[in-house]
Image (cartoon, rainbow, N blue to C red; front, side):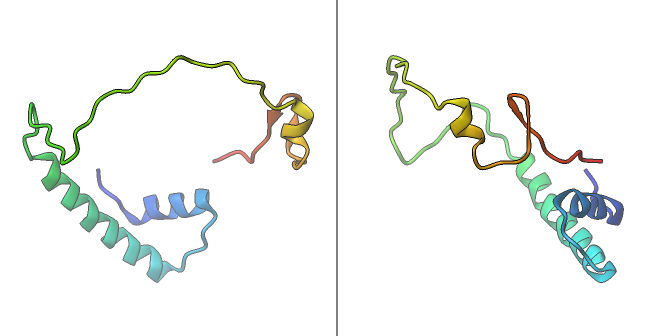
Length: 92
């Protein structure tokens, strides 16, 4: 995956982070550098080599039904409600 200035601008817009052009160029270079490190990690063969310093085991328990919050309690602190759902701004 290649990160260019347009990608940085798009992510910044979605995250509502204002960036100057200099910052856009800087972040594009930094993200490219980060992704190049990940591409090196991807090349490491890890099949059948699960190593952990901790002994792990699955701990299962029975599901327990507990009372949940009422709708009025869930939506009491928001104005962004439509029916039984939270409403958020559309991402373009």
